[in-house]
Amino acid sequence: MEYDDVIIRVEEMTARYGERLVLDALSFEVRRGEIFVILGGSGCGKSTLLKHMIGLYRPYSGDVKIGDVSVVHAEGEERDRLIRRFGVMYQSGALFGSMNLLENVCLPLEEFSDLPRPARELIARMKLGLVGLADFTRHMPSEISGGMKKRAAIARAMALDPEILFLDEPSAGLDPVTADELDDLIIRLSRSLGITFVVVTHELPSIYKIADRVIMLDARTKKMIAEGDPATLRDSHPDEWVRNFFNRKASASE
Image (cartoon, rainbow, N blue to C red; front, side, top):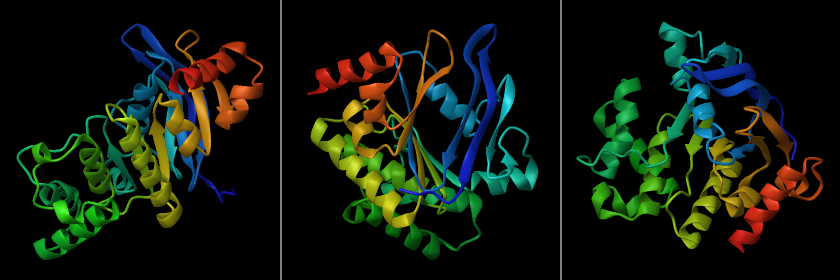
């Protein structure tokens, strides 16, 4: 698959928690329209990287850019415009338990648009329909399954028609069948709507199924140690540790 340009640039980004180095001088690009996966072992900094990419954390040094705009330095109206360009699905789904699904998906529209309530609800219904939840708009989060909560969280992340969706461990806690269905949804949304996905996961079946390209972080060196097609990394990467990571996980998941 060909991609017409780069939409995200991470430039020499270093992350620290106090004196503890977490990520050291990472540089990579995400291409428009691809499903880009961040992976690695426990404690390698996957979720930390995602939080820096969306501006929740400020890097110790370096920069993150969406288009030509710095996530690190944007302020005021420029930052508001930047935030509208992406949506985020957190690992737990982070739905508000006191609101039904329609109300949850309406929240970004209430915050970032001047649309009247009927228009907001129409858009929210459309987004829930895209993820297969058209018949569950009035359900509370406590009344639906874990997989449906993830789908509702994706619908909310799409409320403002973002160019990019960041997903943090979307398959976590799901059974294999439900996880596979969620992978199908991610692929369909990417191909039909042209959304760029940045996905943090360690689930190897999902990685092989959805990823156009991956980067692998290493907790030992705090650096990126591999980049490319996951099957190619598994079969022919020069670092034995990288090959073993993929092959060991593949054997465990089969």
